[in-house]
Image 1 (cartoon, rainbow, N blue to C red):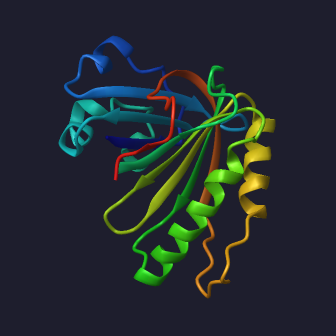
Image 2: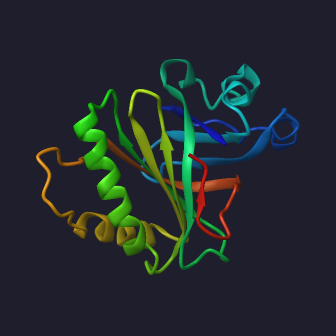
Length: 195
């Protein structure tokens, strides 16, 4: 499965869900707005990279979208959270930009494996995902029932230590929080590794 993330600096009307869901390979989407600014995010999910890269897979998310961020990622895993049966109200995107060298990728992988079990019991966590690019860049995407739950998840993730200590610490390049306006996302019932 592949995810396309489109970020825009200007707000826009929600995408046409019927038209989007009619696209070949459609697997889900989320549309979200920043709580303290005009920015918005559209995340779409498709079966293949070609489908996710299609012009129709990411309808305009605002007048700022042309100058915004628009990238396709492979979904490497999806994990359910303690609130997996609740509806998500917030989404967090944590970006680790590429290119990343082999040592950094190894450090990223160790940290990711250490964080997953720690996140299992975070109250209000609906699901979390790892989205990977070919250049080694990746996004940690978290769905939660509230902004407080996103904060608890972030605190849990940053409290995890990895042994042995690495000379290539994993630090995010950007952290973006949004309130979900609408979503129809592929939510994992159990751990799902696709890569």
